[in-house]
Image (cartoon, rainbow, N blue to C red):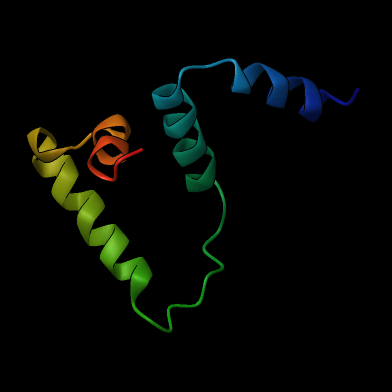
Length: 70
C-alpha cells in the first residue's frame, strides 16, 4: 500500500468535521486552477469571509442533512 493510501485510510477514520477541515487546509495549499465562468469561486470566498467574521452563523452538516430530510 502506498503512503497516500495509508494516509487516506487514516483520514477516513476522523470525524466528519475534522475531515472537512483537513480537506480545506489541503486545498488551500494548491494553486488556483479553476475558471470562474459563473462567479462561483467569488461567492464561495465571500461566504468564507462572512463565516470567518461571524462564526455564529455557521450551520452544521448534520443540521443541513436534517433540514433536507436525510
